[in-house]
Figure 1 (cartoon, helix red, strand yellow):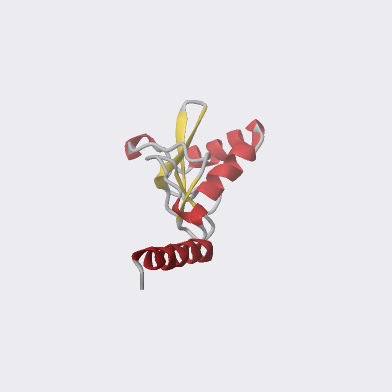
Figure 2 (cartoon, rainbow, N blue to C red):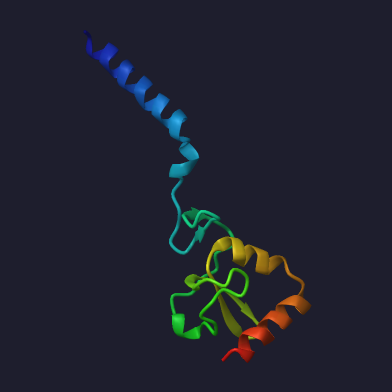
Length: 112
């Protein structure tokens, strides 16, 4: 078998593999751009703001899903850092009107 034929066969296997698994799954992600999806696996997202200083987070449980917060999933509201368990909850928080956010913040602060 010629070298050229062997290269063509290897390239076809690589192409088939990428089609099978979906090349979008291997997109590079910058640090701090990770989110946890509904299955609690990490995916790239524009919604992850995150902080690595867990001391700033005012809550231990996600105000939406009532699970432990992920220090990389946070949002600032009225000068407070609120933690969320995953990117989906963070995304949901961002969609809430200010009144609902204020009510949830008040609930968080009353538990302390």
